[in-house]
Amino acid sequence: METTNEFERYQKAKKQVEDIKGFYGHLASYVLVMGLLIFINLRYTPQYLWFVWSMLGWGIGLFFHAMKVFNWFPFFNKEWEEKKIKQYMEEEKKTNKFE
Image (cartoon, rainbow, N blue to C red; front, side, top):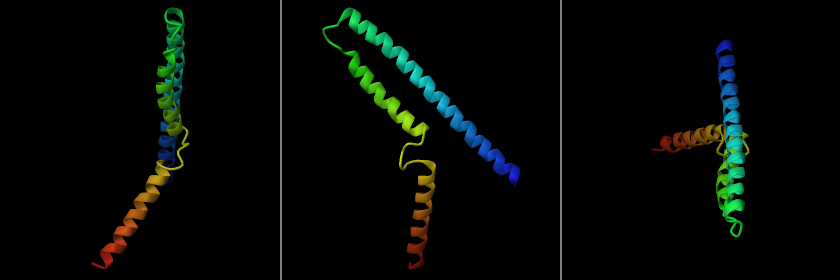
């Protein structure tokens, strides 16, 4: 029993590390591509700073990716899901008692 629990903890930790690694890859590509877009924008059309829209759009996606990976969501994480599932199961059990 203990080895199964330890294996599950290992798998969970491994997935968390992979998620963090994926986020940093996402961040690195964001920085590189935005640097290239800024260069292109300032070199060829400095009168209109269009790179800001790309930076903003992708930045929002990057922000939500960070929130998910680093568990910054106050809800919608695994603990919240488990709690809600148990709550709904209990409510269903109570309502079916009287039927």
